[in-house]
Length: 80
Image (cartoon, rainbow, N blue to C red; front, side, top):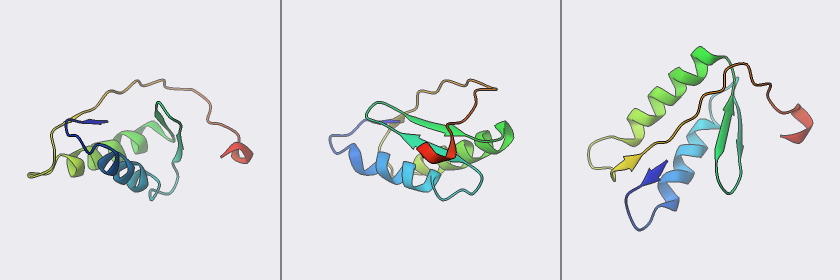
């Protein structure tokens, strides 16, 4: 998620925080990316919902870049 605004961190953090509220998903964030694991249908539904929410009228313009790797095993629960 790349907000096309000078103050880009708050919208990104809010998006990540909302992803973390969805049970059944594993969300891992580092300095360069946020990775989301879970059943494909659930991941896509949550992303659709949260992207639509982030793009509501009045919100800053956004660019989303996404890579989908079906079948990639999630990290072990102890590294969460």
